[in-house]
Amino acid sequence: PPPPVAMSLNRLKETLLPCSSSSAQSQSQPRSPSPPRPPRRPPKTSLSQQLLRLEASYSLPAPPPSPPKPLSQKTAEDAAEQPTSSSEEDVAPRPRRRPAPPPAASFEPRGPYEPLVLSPLGEHPIVQVPPSINCRLLAHQRDGVRFLYNLYRNNHGGVLGDDMGLGKTIQTIAFLSSVIGKDNNQGEKSTDKGKKSSPVLILCPTSVIRNWENEFSEWANFSVAVYHGPNRDLVLEKIEGQGLEVLITSFDTFRTRDKVLCDISWELVVVDEAHRLKNEKSKLYTACLGITTQKRFCLTGTIMQNKIMELFNVFDWVVPGCLGDREHFREYYDEPLKHGQRLSAPERFVQVADKRKKHLVSVLKKFLLRRTKEETIGHLMLGKEDNIVFCRMSDVQKRVYRRMLQQPDIQILVNKDLPCSCGSPLTQVECCKKIEPRGIIWSYLHRENLDGCPLCPFCLVLPCLVKLQQVIFYSCNTFDSFNFEVLVT
View: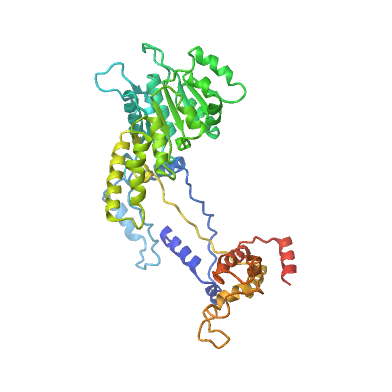
């Protein structure tokens, strides 16, 4: 059989053949029927499935060929008696051997089964991530856990601004396991702590509350409660009895019950989707200001959406005063960056804006960690595969499409560069064919102004293309085809 590479090239050539070649091939000599090919599976895009495919591809290299054994006298005589043929057609083609893939050691989805020590050398008690969690972390996730703990150790907060899909939730849970004291392999709370730590508050959208709860139960044995719904007051009794480690609540619940929750002494606060704090005038931002702890952490992949002042609002809540007061930030960063980004900005403004931007980045690096997929797990991701399938229009679609092309609205666009029929040397679009009152689309667009608009006739381009696209993408079955033919005829 032909090698897989040749089969794929032949399949590609057959796909790209024009429609006329199909009729020519039918008149030529018929070919032998080829065996049916299995249907092509769509590409898998989830990270877990891609990791499994990569692990399967990293097989061990083929062993080196063993040296040929010397033939005995009897074997040599038997081989000499057998007929040999020098014809190349009788010799079966040998399948090509693929080059050996790289060794599996270059790809390591899991780490060693050992704790991740976060506290400095010689400091007691030792703060560490348990081995049961550390062995499941990637390299960039361990760096994120170290970043969060260093801020926590210095009584500061910070922002974890990784791209979506890099595991901000997992990094936070691993960080909390070290803070709460999940020191042993089972992820249970250590008993050598001198005092009981306060609970941790997690604020997140309502849609991801269950996801946080499931992740906590999967990664370690946390005592987690959800403060949401009609039975939320029962959770407060558990907090007062010091039997709770993590409390999860939504933004809406915290906004309405902020006085009750702000009276509790929290060890630290984690805000998921922290770009919700971009508006300093919102009730949520005002309620979050009532949290007494200074250990505030934010998780977001879009730290700034529209304005630079949104950046100030988030960081001023996380680390109060790290960027100065509001007026200082507006005068020193906001205004120079706005003036320097204009197209007509003088060179002096551009230079000042560049200096202020570099200074702002250097300040934010102390409290912000942001990584992208390309610089972290890009080597683990498979490229996107686009499958283009050409489909012919049905007979009804062809008839409707041709009728649409004959409409006055489309004809005025098709013939816009032809000489005008009035004898003028100008083209039709420059002379007499700027408006088309007979067209259905034109009449609908200019129903309030029959004299047309300054863009005529080019205002018809997008509406006409949309109508033609609707004809092409129309999926017609038997019943629809009957109704369609009635409309056409």
